[in-house]
Length: 344
Image 1: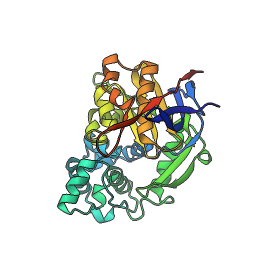
Image 2: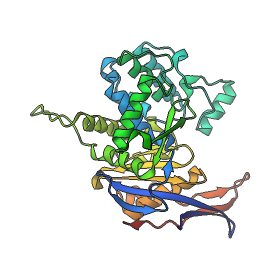
Image 3: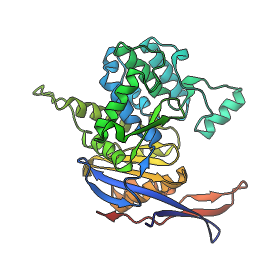
Image 4: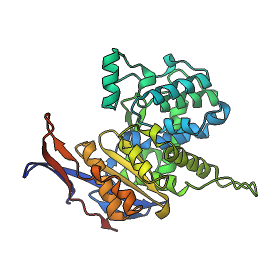
């Protein structure tokens, strides 16, 4: 099986060959395109946050605590710990009547170099509200409260809230629970592993639900889960600056597509996106965990699948063939995508 999807060059020489896997599916889960092994068991890491946020939304917490669409976007975020992200986290804590001490994530260096420099200058020590996963953790606290569950150990795999999250995920992926393996993520919450094409399915469903609303004229309602998925889609695409941050790929991708595409990165080079106009979901995993490569692959796939307009795709071309620059600013190499999708 040829799964080499990209090459990195230093001068004229190939320095690294990057293996990857791609699955593109429709909202029914049918595999439309593939590269490598589309069913590779994959840890999506933060790319699966919309599914975790779905369980939070279905708890009724957003209604009970009057949380808004931007708060929902933060629940799906791997943010840059910018002041707006930290402030919104603190506001969410206040809205649900919780303290930072209840959060079971830790502080860490930010994903943004600009924020890191500011923290160093200020001799700032990050705390849980600064975690890139802070929104998800406050959302979990809100869900536990809304369901009448204990807040203590809300992150533990055997906590009733995490069992509810696992059940929600299995339903979205259309997998039996024992087909999903569980580890512990960097932010201290359970993190699943399952077939890559099922991650694509989650995002195909998210995309297909993008327009789902309760019609104002008749008052009739679509399936409650579809409505919830539509709320998640709109939260992420209307507030992309909260999902990532300045000069972050997820933010720039959703801004370029002006609400017509949703995308989310996961640690160690997984990525998933949903495209409503074609009702499809796409998932990518790079074997060596190189996030620069996964972004280049995603942009190349946008071109190969002709998703969006040429102008939308062009806004992202800086991510498609990124230069390798040394410490004095000299370009020493580049990344070249070699992946060619196969129609199934």
